[in-house]
Length: 281
Image (cartoon, rainbow, N blue to C red; front, top):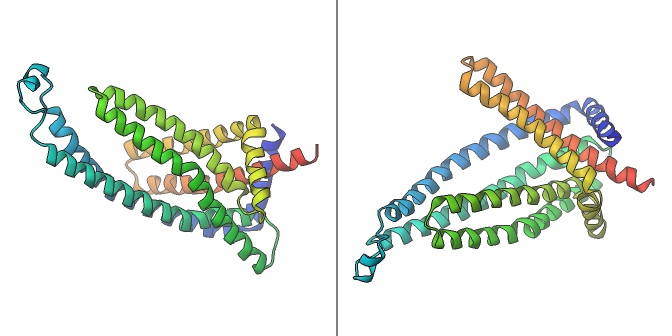
């Protein structure tokens, strides 16, 4: 576990050296969280309304096989179900596209600045090249990982919605897809940690090495940061549920923002330690 300790030391030492840059990261993080929550709540309400437009008629549908054989329709609301489905699909696509743009531009900038916290001074020309490569490799990672996953998830879910007569079956599929998304997110986080390298060949090599070859070390790191985030958000949730003081809620909210910023830098620093440790053996 020495690599975790070295990564933690590198994280706090770098933050001490680049306090102003870290404050900029926290400010951008606040903007990103507020923007994401606003966008998420806006489209969640629309999608839930569309979902109700699908589930409502299906709950009142005719499931009696004898009546269906006699000519009674399964449901008279086919048009309403179809329109709700089309509207839901449209809202999901728009939401996903806007979140992707928000993630790439704003959260991508946060990740890039987090890399800069761990670096010594470099020329702005090199910074610009690294920034461009980071954005390109981030887009490539999203396309490689999330593109096929979204398509497969969509058709799997659509299939089970069509054939399942119980929502419990659909809920099970959703749980499986949630676990699969966690695996995808693991590979994506590793990609973000190594994305600033200029060479695409080196990027692919480091990505595979850190996520697959060094899986044992990297997955320990992954679940360590997941646990830290869980504790932070659990404390915030508890405060929202039981704490009456607005000042306490604001303080805990800011603590979570700081924790996210530190954990992101820690993730990058420790991945670099894993790569550095391997290259010297």
